[in-house]
Each structure stands twice: as structure tokens, then as C-alpha cells.
Image 1 (spheres, one colour):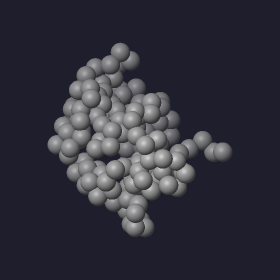
Image 2 (spheres, rainbow, N blue to C red):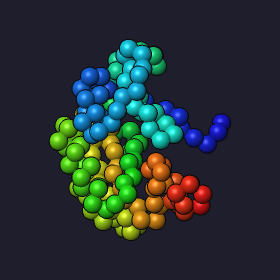
Image 3 (cartoon, rainbow, N blue to C red):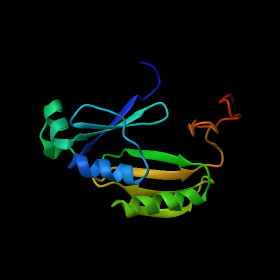
Image 4 (cartoon, one colour):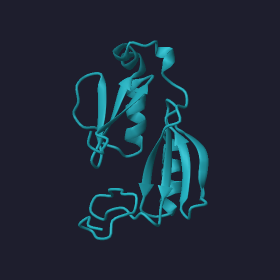
Amino acid sequence: MEQRISLITLAVADLTLAADFYEALGWTRTPSPDGVVAFDMVGQTLGLYSASGLAKELGIDVAGIGGFSGVTLAHNVREKGEVAQVLADAERAGGKVLKPAQDVFWGGHHGYFSDLDGHVWEVAYNPFSPLRDTDGAFRWNGYGTSDGTP
């Protein structure tokens, strides 16, 4: 298996409301089949799929989907002040701020919000891992030049 994640799928209670939430954050849908909402990102896609449909596909009871699973999604930003802005945008769109923007022990700045279905997102500014200038791509130790070379 190659070291990458291609698609992240979130089970959602209401596909339309969930799609509206991410669009309110400024995301743009990509064409996808009925019953699936997709947002292309840098190197991956975020998919939204009904919780009942995903449960059926997995052969489990829908009650087995939901709650905090110990997984968080992260969105890194270019500037410290952007953390509070993204959290405010998420709250305005109907999300819940779980931890307001604040400095963190490792030298960065972050906060957390949950979307309409309780999926937890971290919004972080990491001065030690600057995003690639050209497309905002993230790499653990950052990008040294705008063309992506270390």
C-alpha cells in the first residue's frame, strides 16, 4: 500500500445540510453521482455520504456510526489569525467551536470545531510547517520553496 490517503468519507445524517455547511465554509463541490457529495482538495477528496447508506454498505446498524471515534481532521492555515477566522466561519455555518483559538505547547496556534454531524476538525497554524505557496499543500516539516522542494 502506498503511503497516502485518497478519499476521506464522512457519514452524515442529512446530506443536503452537510453539503451546505461545507459550502458555507467556502468549499466548492465537484461533480459526483447522486447520493454522494464530493469536495476535491489538494491531493485528496472529502466525500459526504448518508450515515444510513454507509451503514447499509458496511452491513452494520446505523447506531454503530457516530460519536467521537478518536479521529480528527486537520486544516492548517498560513497565518496565526486565520485560526480564529475559520472557527468563526464554522460556527456561523452551524458548527460548534469545541476549543477556541489559542497558543499550544508545541509553539503553534490552534482550535477545534465540530461539523453538523459531530466530526471534529482542528484548525492549526504551525510556524514550523509552512504550507506550500502555490497550493497550500501541507507536509509535516513544511515546504522550503514555492516549487515544493525541501
